[in-house]
Each structure stands twice: as C-alpha cells, then as structure tokens.
Length: 367
Image 1 (cartoon, rainbow, N blue to C red):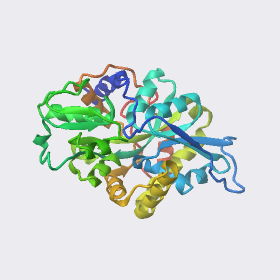
Image 2 (tube, rainbow, N blue to C red; image 1 turned 60 degrees about the vertical axis):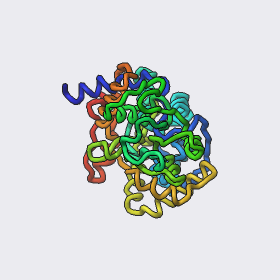
Image 3 (cartoon, one colour; image 1 turned 30 degrees about the vertical axis):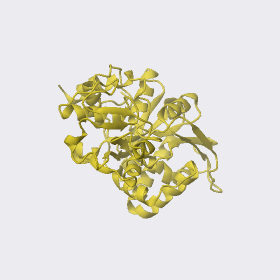
C-alpha cells in the first residue's frame, strides 16, 4: 500500500478517541492569560493588527515558544503589533481557545491538533510548522525492573487513555508479544493512566513501577531514583518523531497571512538561536517556566530533559503514519478525513528566504 494511502487510512482513526485531545505534554486544562509584551518604539503594525495572541504550554517540549517569548523574538517580528500570550496545561483547553478566538496561533501536540481538526470537519485549524521531536522515555524503578523483559507483570503509567504516549506504549507492549486490553489497561502489563502532575508522587509512593512519559516528567522520575530503560526516539527512523507542532486558526490565517508569517519567522529564528546558544537558551526557557508556572525546574531535571528534545522547523508529518498504525494495532480508532490539516506554504516561504530546504506535508496538505 502506498505510504500516503496508509497515512490517510491509519491516521484518520485517531480522532475517534475522546481522550486523544490531551497533548503529549499536557497537564490539566487551566489557561492563564498574559499581555505583558513590550512593543518597540516606532515600529509598524502588521496587517493592521493591534495584537496577535499566541498560546503554548509551560513545558520544555514547547521550548521554542518559551524562548521566543522570553527573548522578545516574537515581538521583534511583529513590530508594533503586540504579542500577547496565554499559557495552557492541556490540549483541549488550547483547542477551545483557538476555536473561540481567544488565541490565534498555538504550540501544541499532534494528538489534540488532529482531534481538533477532525471534530470541526477540517474547518478550524491548520498545522503550519513543527517545533519539537523526542523527549519521551520509559523510566522504571531499578529495584523492580532491570531489563525490558522485566516490564511484564509491572504497573507502568502513561498520561491518559489514548494519548500519544499511551498508544506508543501499547504498541511497544504488542511488539513484545504481550497482551493488554487497551481500554482497561489490564493484561500482561498493567497500564495505569496517571496525570503527569501526580505520576512522580505515585512513583515515590511505590504504587507505580515505572512510566512511559514525556519530559520533564521523565527526568523528574529519574531525579526520584528512576532509571531510563528506553528512549522512544530509539524506536524511530533517524530518532525523530513529532511531539510539538504549530497550529493556527484558519480564519486568522486567511485574514492575516503576514502576521502568521512573522510568527513563523520568529519560530525559525528562535530555533536557530537556541542551537547556537544552548546554555543561554536553556536558562531563558527556565526563566519563562518560572514566570509562567511559578516554579523553575531544578538542574537535575532541566538538564537531561533539555538534552532529550530536538527542536525542528519540520512538522515531521510522515511520522504520524507510524503513530496512527500503532493506534490501529491497539484497536482504538476509526477513520476521519485529514486531508488539508497541513498548510506549510508560509513556513516554506520563510525557509526558502533563509536558504533552507522545504519541508513536506506527507500528502496531507491543502489542495
């Protein structure tokens, strides 16, 4: 079967999971607004806009947005159009904010983007760029689990039924030849659906033997005595798979393409700056995390979490093919139509201007 056909067939089922809306790095559903951006004197407005409202999570997998805000890169590209912000704890609330017009552009995981697109029959959003890959690990109690085969019979947490890590772990279990009922989580391994906020405490209390989780939860578990048994990146070609994308309201994209292009340019510039200034970027991200969440990450959590995430302008659309196949194998999904979920036109325009190669939408772009 051609790769594009397989992608459409298998990815389409993802939206059937009612809980799949939780982003890979989601923590709850509360949003916090913030309009503290500084506007450069003498700058001009873009598309006549007073402001552009940008959403993201207070999480290291959204490092591009954290650093771009902290260092003023968004505001630099938007000129006299003020960059305003809202931070979120989970995908559903960010999709709701996009649908209601409370934000215009957002950083978000692949699962809520897919579900949000499908629930609106393809009318509310577009994925317009990539942001991050990786940052997901299987962390275990080394006193109870010393090898991959020891995972059998243990209690392992994932963030939520049907979310990105849950499907990946169910697929890995199947690859070992073990059986687990996807809905109940019961079988050769007990899959415990546990919010990332409480998983470290549950691990410390001994009610979990490990967890398949994103950063920084994975590094929090390591700091609590856990051991990384498997990095999910090692299961993917080139060790890359999408964990964070950039989405935009279709209405905003149509009405204000110059503003969208400015935000994408800021994103590309930020990723390049982070690569050139890793230590300064990490510090800036942590400063932003402290401002957004009230607490900075300690070095023993931030340092390994930062190293495990790869920033990328490419949305890695083709990796969704395999992610969907995993969900199909778990028996959880039905097929929607994802044609048009990507519009990488403006991103490729920005990349071309910088002499960078174009990125691909895996056949799911706007026709």
